[in-house]
Length: 350
Image (cartoon, rainbow, N blue to C red; front, side, top):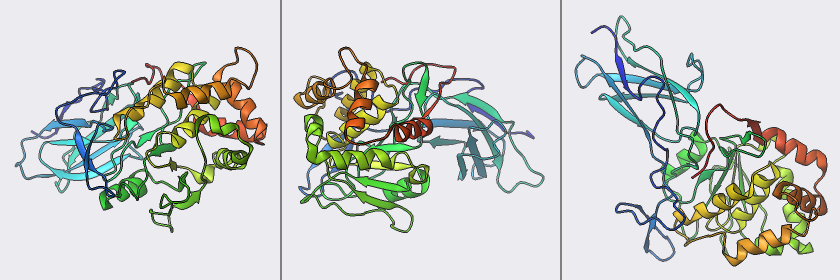
């Protein structure tokens, strides 16, 4: 055989969902969830906030120990691949691809003379979100991007991530650090924790800027004392130089959930997707966060005070942010960065 044959995903195929466990409206009781250890207590907790890989399979008549180069990218010509790795065997699992996205891939023998390579083949990733990321040692790490927005646009992937803390009750592993710094390319670590929570930089300070903005979530956003913090947080997202941004509190649930709601709603997220995005934290290790929780209901009631009767979540959040001192130019800059035209396929929904 003079060429390598790509077997799976088949040409033009859509992959299975890129999540190991699906959110079904209540905690999913799976047989084999990942176990994460709480550093403070030493206890183990089940974690279901896990990505599922795209499994690449190919055929070649070369010896089994042949080394292959595998490249995967969003450009049809693979000029700037997202994945460029060497491996042996006839398969490779690739994690953390964007949801609802066209990819091309190609496999070649790494040291063959003359070169032996496959044709370039394409596949499409499933539209179901979220785009979970696995950084060993922490939990509840996911891309805010991928959701379809009112009017047909979508939140851009690869720019804003939310997560649990990286030190304290959990401890980021060296492999997790490589995911955040090298794979995701995080430039800004926005830490929402306050005193007594070991708020400090964890990532390489030469590569990642650490910003500490302690806030309170949900209905407390209405208190004047928290206005400057929320203004500074939102203004941070208006500067392209800060991206990609990772923001987190302790569990990535309440304070981080409030910031995620504000950004998502500001860009045009509808009420159902906003609630689903909040509930997805239930897949992590911090107990359930449901739309019926008192905290989430307090956030909705507080924002309902802004924008007038029957106002959309976007309008409510706009008026709230104007009230804390965020300018219209800042909000426009954030939307310009985070919103992209929708692709030709389905919505990002759990």
